[in-house]
Length: 165
Image (cartoon, rainbow, N blue to C red; front, side, top):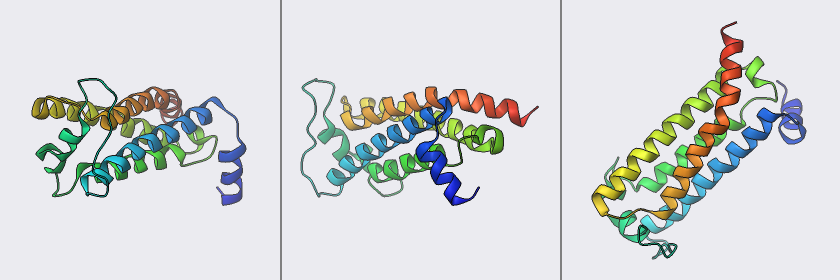
């Protein structure tokens, strides 16, 4: 697709699939924003992560613990930032009719959202087991991932049907 057409379709197009894709991009940006805030804390740029007044949450404790640094010798929030960026990229890729014209894109978007959600839920369990507390920002991202799955499935089903007709 030529860039002029893609620009127009993504910005001005109207369809149920495109509306859901816009929501997926927004939710992915929310997950990335959570990763940015925690990443600022984990690298010492900010010194405190405020939490809502609910005893389950202690983001400072969780994100400063071994749990937050035990993968790939890096703060986990920096990986979270990249991860949600990839999800946003997949949701934003392709034109308004991508389920028909590029069916692998919506299938990949849905698959990525499912993997994101499963990973976030697994990490939430680890967070709790290791710290007896949860990171509020990480749990916001988990909810965003779960919502993204629900939004991605209708277009993926349509794409799957088109691919295997």
